[in-house]
Amino acid sequence: MKHVFVESNWVYDFCSPVHHRKPEAERLWKRALARELRLHIPGICLREGAEAVRKKCQPPLLGPSLRAIKPVRRAG
Image (cartoon, rainbow, N blue to C red; front, side, top):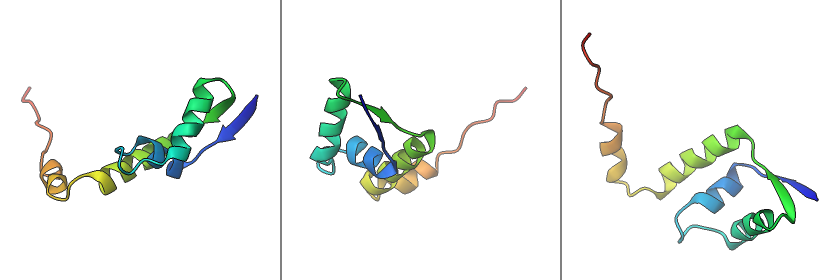
C-alpha cells in the first residue's frame, strides 16, 4: 500500500466549496477510500487548511460580523 503525506494546500483543495474544489484532491480521497493508498494528514495541516477555507471562501460581509460575536460569560 502506498502512503501519501498531504499538506494544508490539499486540505484547502478538498474541503473548500465546490466551485473552489480541485478534482485532483477528490481523486486522491477516492483512492484512499478504495484502499489503494493511505493518506496521512498532520493535525497542523487540518488547522491551516480550515483557516484558509474560512478566510478565502466566506463572503466578505459575513467575516466581520462573525468576529464581532463574543462569548458570553455567566455569573457565578
